[in-house]
Amino acid sequence: MGFVSQFGRSVDNQATRDASGQLDLQLPAYATGTVHHEAVLDDGTVVHHHQVFERGVLVDWIEDDEPGPWALIRPGSPLRPCPAGIASPDDVAAAGLRLGDQVLDLPLLDDLPAPAFDALARVPDATARLRFEVFGTPVGTQRCDVRYQDGSRTGWLVEEWDEPEEGTPAAGAPEMGVSMSFRNYLKMRSGESTALEAIEDGGTVDARWTLLLLLHGLIQSPEYVTAYRGLPRLPDELGWWGEVAPLIPPADD
Picture 1 (spheres, helix red, strand yellow):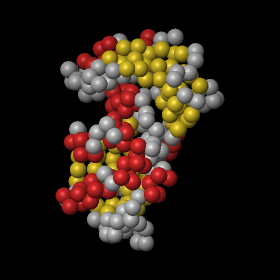
Picture 2 (cartoon, rainbow, N blue to C red):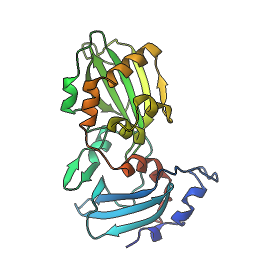
Picture 3 (tube, one colour):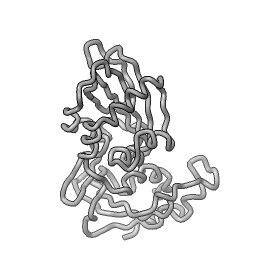
Picture 4 (tube, helix red, strand yellow):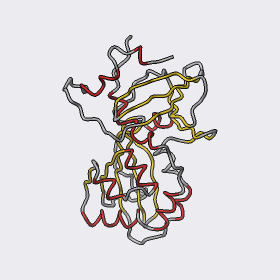
């Protein structure tokens, strides 16, 4: 069964207007490929389906009888829109990723508690707080509060930024703000791009240059690189789906 017929206008016209009605929306050429999905309905039924994109435009959307080789798992109807706002930790935890027979947490949730980061070298005075924001993820924008205390790392997802409580890691330490796209985040941790390249390509930085040097040194350390490379290598399509999916026209009621 094709889901395409349930939309008010053809998905082939997806690239002609954005949410404000402006014409000639520029969609990314790299958003080309097939994205597999599993929609978990309220009664536990799983609907397998896949979407085919060409240069950011959705050109086909088909329900499948069998699971695909991998799938983005989301609760709710297959026609549920892709959220574009700030994701809560519960939003991230409710989604998942299936690779073959293995079900994994959706990044960034798989990054934060990774045991490999426990091996980071102790670096005296390498203490700072990082407000790390990743946009264009399959659940919207994810925010992560990362604390570096003498080189060791702790981090968790947040919906709103809070000031660190006295006695917690990096309380009173200088603060940095970094944002990047989900696609670039996945490329950075797999080694396809450096942290600087990931930020330069559409990201933002709010920090003193001395703090950025500290952060860059930590992320480029052998222990940090090894930890990142030990995380699962994920399909390229997962990286850009959250960027273009919010632009899919809404389904008819």
